[in-house]
Length: 511
Image (cartoon, rainbow, N blue to C red; front, side, top):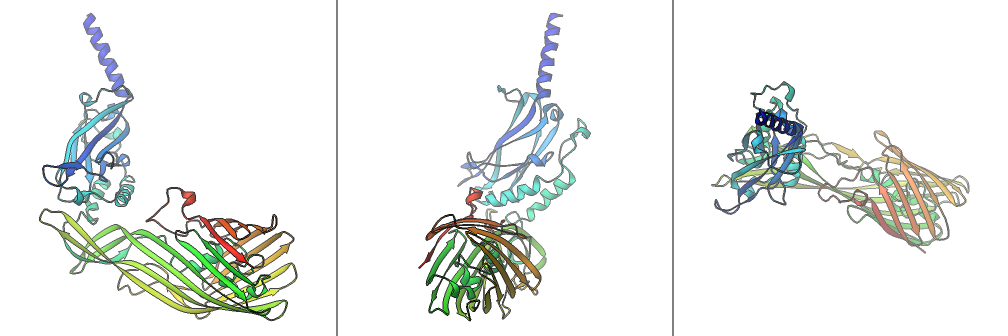
């Protein structure tokens, strides 16, 4: 009787321990290295527990191929059930991409952590070369984000005898996800047919440069104290400068910059010039269609799209009288667009896939002109107006695919207006831009002279909600410009968000 009681108590302890534990599944996926006799861990492979896709994981690079995921589910709910674990890789001909595991107490590894039950999947090897099955990090992350959003099984409604194989929605996704390039079974030449959603705003870099990406927020269309960007947004004001010449640079070194300057030829005539550039890139999904069979399509979600936009200015101005001055700007605007074009899919004798992408680069260049005016209403109040791109130059308004018939365009014709109020050390300014489609945005700014040769500036764009803070000390300037993620750069993202292209530096030399 004594032994029976002890046995029952032991079973009760074991049951309580198992019932209070959550299940963690771990393992290592391996692939062929150089030959069938040499293997290594396969990195960037997605491991999907089909009964709980939200716990999916990507195999590590250090150590290569290792994965683990905590189900955060009581061990007793999964005990004596068969669960399916699925691998998503760049190989559609690999065997052993699914493991069906029976969850039982005897497989729990004996560890000190009594809150977690451990199960190890051993000897999981894919019979293909590692280079042919490993996903790129970006592609693995993209696919994982889709998988983890899939619905999970309701474990409370699953009978003890049921195998946990996943919801129909998840199984359908896993079966169709092989349309992603690298897992297709067909080879041939494919042409880009359609694009997924993108973030880059094409053709709007000049509008943004005047209001959102500037250290002189709110003062560009009626500049008075800071003339560093007048050659771009209101050349008529440069003839009113108290300095004979100005040379200025503002850049974040990474993807944006402005450089300009002007010279007062006489009391009534000034001439200036400058250059603005913005570089952007992003990854987008592209659907390709076989050139011989339009119904045969594949998709790839990591195509790199690039956009480079530039503008060069020559800006003379003339003082009519002490209150009124006029100016103009002759400009050349460029746009360089890189888009997806051709995909060539090949298989070698061992079944390994190779994908050759051929992109197209298209350049557009337009000449245009601005006409500007500055009027001093009083010693304290000044207004400025700039009619921009009077010739109606247009740039591409969105990415597109080859042979696309209706490509969106951005009309650059616009009107910039500004007003500046001066009160001792403090100036206040308001800028607004109106395009062919109506009101674009407005910016409000303040600048303050705390002591000699210093200038503090701050401003915000009311619609875009971008903002800037700047400090200029004699010739040098530093600025923090938050463009509210207007500039898109997904290829080289900074590890620190605060330093991801938002710190600007430069100089303003005036003599």
